[in-house]
Length: 509
Image (cartoon, helix red, strand yellow):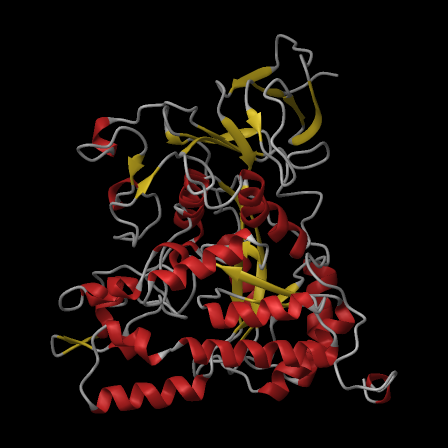
């Protein structure tokens, strides 16, 4: 066999195990075709020497916001995916979005294809945000999206006035999702609780960024999570609760999984590493940490989310990359009114597409890892790929998969002095100046990480070489992915809700 590329001398990590360091990866035409010892070389075969470092699958970031109309100064497809490959991510799933007035999904879809076509540094696909689920859209257009476009997931909001849907609309969409075999993603927060608390805080003049966290308590997330799970159980459909930030909501997900319901959870690095105190910075500077659900208050809150990552409650660990510049009329300073911050008007969301993989890898290695290396691979690559219809193609290192990998630095590597603080003996510090997205800050400024991707390989081609050229791929390298129907990672369909008679659902479903 004539191989295009052999990756050698790396310790390969899959979703199941850490392999013998002597195993090599053979690549042909962008695919992994073989793995074994002493693979045959020919003069034209390229060899990538990992020099003893870990090799993990290219990251699958299944929740990113790029070129969104509500963020005119946020990342476009070129800048956002440039950051993705620099951080070890080779596949992103972003959101085509229907506006409330749209009577068809197809104009928004074509517009989003136009924004992404020939612009992406990595492979990509779309979810669809539904805000006006007319009978024609639900009963006809969703099927076309699945069969023609390979868009096999939709996202629904239970909060935000321009986006939120009532329970009946959510049920109508879930009915269609059941028939089509697609995944429903839900932003679960109780909108009325948030509105009441926000109004009361504003009456008292409590409008600094920190009060954003006060306005969206854990109970608001937990109630909506339980309600979303109940709606999904009624109709026997898989559901993913996105960007879970609280132990209360996580407990509802865990309880549903214990009953073998196909309920999946997603969390993000900022809920594992940051606290609401970040929003207490003087004047408006805390605005850079405003996101929804918000950062929580206590170290025990983040410890609980770490437990959920370690014990399998969370299926995916995404960035929820939702960048707006800090110092911009459209960015975080938009919340300034007469020089004073008003948290209601601060754009929600944090940048994180590039930092997700290094941050999580650092907590899977070192002297006191919070998760195992296979678990790191599961939540950052393998399980999101399976859930969203990319199983067998993305998210793992095995014959038949796309040749997407991350080669980290070997143990003992000394990063440049300018990347470290005084007293650091290893690792490096995250700085906004080193990040490749189009955002003027990072919420992880100054945070230590033990490693960073040395090489990112997309379908057998090096697209990131940190030591020689940085982003060496080009926009347009990424391909649009028509996805299959996803598979459940936890639970199973076919169950009967508690209290229902046998065949009761069949009377009305």
